[in-house]
Length: 488
RNA sequence: GGCGCCGUGGCCAAGUGGUAAGGCAGAGGACUGCAAAUCCUUUAUCCCCGGUUCGAAUCCGGGCGGCGCCUCCA
Image 1 (cartoon, chains in turn brown, purple):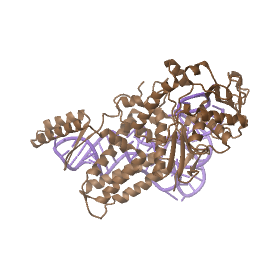
Image 2: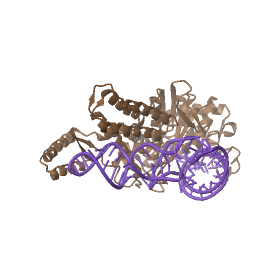
Image 3: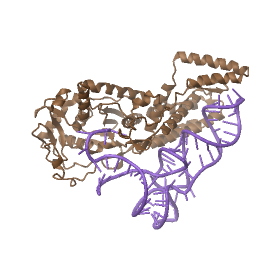
Image 4: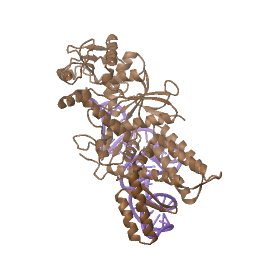
């Protein structure tokens, strides 16, 4: 059975079939870089990462594009406040997001286009819409989309065109729109725009692009006339994506995207995240507080993307423990003695069954929770076998380790967690020395001295495990953050 | 008001017609000098009331409760 996705366009689960077999073109709505990204942004980005990884895992040749919006009202306002141009203003935020994305284990996409690099394409698109009679100019040099000329308007969001008709609200509108629901393709220049370098020349006058047109232009230019997949947060369904459809399909006459996937907004400690509630959390803050990146990744990824997700301190701690369990299991497996025999203990079978169950869950609209369930069921089964068997057939151990690696190509939890366990040479040498000292104390049955050393190591986040083969150690990080989750 | 989502054990969360995955936490036990890790055992009238069905957490109807989007917030 193949991948099935919930398409916002049809509000149904549909078998996923790219336009061109084996090849997938994806466009994901990225951040507006006028500030640091918050965990809500990263729920979406990590979902994009999951889609990216899973499609590749399934063997598709994936072309994945996520934009960076570097011009809009807020950006212009903030750049003015700083007294710099929008390019200079946005660049640090763009870099910060890339760093955070790396830290959280996001695989690089193929392209991260900046809106301001595609102004020519946007102008071209607007020109086409004007030619086709789908747009009109106003006195202030703006261009608006005439949604009454696009019969399909509303098909994505399910909006009823007959509601909120022109005339009801138009009086309160200060633009020269013909219909209150028409939206800007091009905004006539204002002095503030010039101040920060946010103005370009177009055949119909100087100005800057509207918000929606950038995604149409970049998607068409970098992915193609018809995207296989278009991703975004649920808030973008209307008006952003609705307007993208109107623009793109109005210009090309072809479907803009085959499948639209929308991520549900997360909550923080049970509440909607918002600046006014004071529970606005940036990823930057979490990382500075030494919250484990793997725990963040796990929590943001652990619920299926259309389900409600509550980001909480308790959840972070649970996630940290969950990732630790996976890492411990992998360590244990790697260290377990093997023998060259062919008889099986059922581990290979369990591994292949797990792989199937994982795939089945993920194929069902990317049900990560189900996929994680399959993985942890395997961990339980395998741990029980490891408890029982002093030696493992080499092939069985390879099968188990192979499964972990394979599933982690999609999940990326071991990948990120492993990085956190790494220690530098100096610390490692110190730990080894302390462990030897403790071993001597233990030989002397001097338990107090031995325990004191163990406590000393624990202070540095080093946890010891005494076993028949000697003492193993690991670094477990400093915990899922000491502070409460809802930091101002 | 329009469109839509959700309500499963202490917390989180799969399962959408055949009597309940998994993570975290708790309790008891094994192992250990003590731990850690691991294993074993243990914790669910699936929001309520009707209905359909041989059979429903799963379908239908009605309640109750929580939530999202609806003028640039992922």
